[in-house]
Length: 141
Image 1 (tube, rainbow, N blue to C red):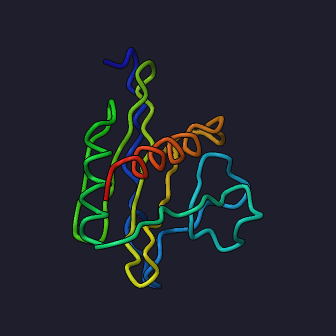
Image 2 (image 1 turned 90 degrees about the vertical axis):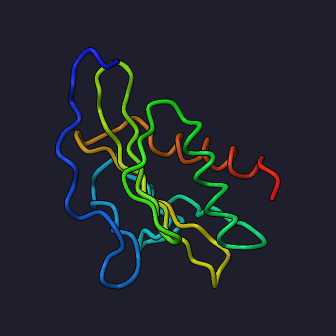
């Protein structure tokens, strides 16, 4: 249980945007990573999407299984093509929003993870995405 509750309000801009992608990270902010960030792999906000082979539905089921094993993770919204999860820090109760968007034509799951509060997350969101990727890749397809 968090000593303080610094969750912040749930952002209204989450979800699939009008162009079919996840929202880009704010320029200049250091608290967000996104696989669909418009500047691409050379930008510090960019992170690689999750890759899978086989059935897209099975890949999303596998991702849900990984998320359900994470401490202080709460699933907010799930559909066959989109997942929104909240991760709360143990000490201060800070909340990060993680979104996952299936791109079956490319055998990818795009990801965006961002802190609700602050200008920097000290690399927490990037580290979490990479840890989730390792767990996702370690589950047999």
